[in-house]
Image (cartoon, rainbow, N blue to C red):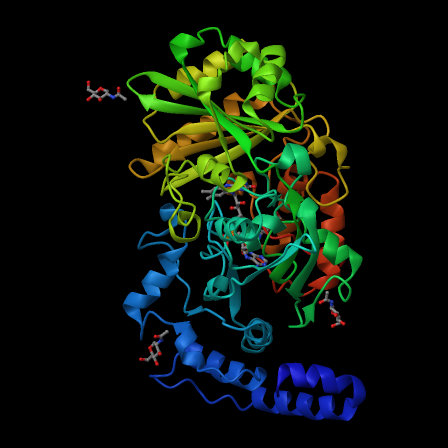
Length: 544
Ligand SMILES: Cc1cc2nc3c(=O)[nH]c(=O)nc-3n(C[C@H](O)[C@H](O)[C@H](O)COP(=O)(O)OP(=O)(O)OC[C@H]3O[C@@H](n4cnc5c(N)ncnc54)[C@H](O)[C@@H]3O)c2cc1C
Ligand SMILES: *[C@@H]1O[C@H](CO)[C@@H](O)[C@H](O)[C@H]1NC(C)=O
Ligand SMILES: *[C@@H]1O[C@H](CO)[C@@H](O)[C@H](O)[C@H]1NC(C)=O
Ligand SMILES: *[C@@H]1O[C@H](CO)[C@@H](O)[C@H](O)[C@H]1NC(C)=O
Ligand SMILES: *[C@@H]1O[C@H](CO)[C@@H](O)[C@H](O)[C@H]1NC(C)=O
């Protein structure tokens, strides 16, 4: 049975599809017993061969621990961003499949259902809790790794680009900049994040005050649904197109590609980084003023704050800014709206948009832009635990004092990052897409600790800081960003009865009122919950 051919034919000739149904039914009951040398992936490969018409030696796309021991580990670890999930005791997939054609992804769904093998899907591997390549709740599971599906086609005339899910943000930026100096795309700060997971969770970055999230700038998508069908915007329901732009990865289908709307950027823009030590801002005057203005400044200006433990009882607070314009204008704006920072021309560098990506990615000055497509970003610790918060009123100096008191005890590697909202973020309604954190948000906090050396005490520390912050951040619900996945907020377990109730708690944090709509859509497009993980959207519980 050839999947695509069958789909085409079945509309015209139901009898053909009936015959192939019989064939499938028959083959299901004639699976030969697994011999001592046969592995689960042998059946999977056999099934794939039957369900795809692309003639490709599929063996070359499979990695098993039994037959390809060293390459299996290499491929597993290749994009696994958080080494906290790469220990010997972390559950491993039974095998890895790296499809090289879109029809392979379709066939994977058919075969995973037929053989009852649970799939996890990975694009860039940056999931904070590694749910794309580790399952704590399903054994066995298989890793479908989309790293070979990473084509990018930029159409400058059309102001758009089709990008496959396995591409990284750095590759997207690079391919756009290759064709134009005045086109850009509003996406994330770290170049190695995958397009597949990033956009489906919303996706913020330095252009969000001007243009919104990446998901706000999606024109079309290609997705494989729970039946192995390939859909695009016109063939999927409006509901499904809504859900995949912010509802989080791994719940509705496998995104193969996005069509992105490119946005204008000036030929040169300005970036700056100004760092204040604790001694230079002892009463938090600068940080307090930042909180009062960050979301109200002109939309062309984005100032992110990074608070880093430097060891030896000190903390450095960096104000890292991007302005879509020249130095002189920027200095004037800062003199008027944020003089406390004391920004001077000397602090500012004019550059192309593509160079600002290196700046925000914290690459050393002078790094060639080619590194965006070749090199791992130096952005985060290799082993980490992160949490997030949404802030709606300025955090008082007394509370900041408590935060910094905790930070000075930390070693280098621990940091907090504040990302300002406002501008376009405040103009888009809460229900436009599933991402609900819009008007009224001043900034978002990312808390990050290095868990390389003392994981359990570091995790305890970050949980304690998060709990200390309770009175100062959003409440009822305490909002969170789904792309900052945090399993402390609750998770699906093997006990399916309790999952729905738990999900209502973390679901309302990530999606507020949009959670219920996501559940209704999930129940419709994936009623058997094929696409599931520790924090996937649940289906409605069956009424008994
Ligand atoms: C170093 C670092 C920097 C970051 N910087 C930013 C930032 O600037 N802005 C921001 O908004 N976020 C940022 N993030 C968070 C990031 O957006 C999320 O971790 C995102 O989910 C990563 O996408 P991925 O494809 O790399 O991850 P993956 O781990 O591959 O996937 C993440 C989730 O999406 C699912 N998924 C993956 N591919 C697909 C697909 N094709 N179809 C359907 N589901 C899929 C996975 O199953 C998993 O549930 C950062 C994360 C890290 C580690
Ligand atoms: C894994 O090992 C098998 C058996 O030796 C081989 O046929 C296959 O090509 C290997 N896979 C890859 C991706 O090299
Ligand atoms: C979407 O899919 C439909 C049906 O398969 C097809 O006719 C149409 O050309 C596709 N649209 C795009 C933009 O690819
Ligand atoms: C911290 O102190 C140690 C020992 O006194 C010194 O070696 C190190 O360079 C200091 N680190 C910083 C960041 O000042
Ligand atoms: C599953 O969860 C439900 C609801 O919380 C609980 O009543 C039940 O005892 C749990 N079952 C198991 C096997 O733990």
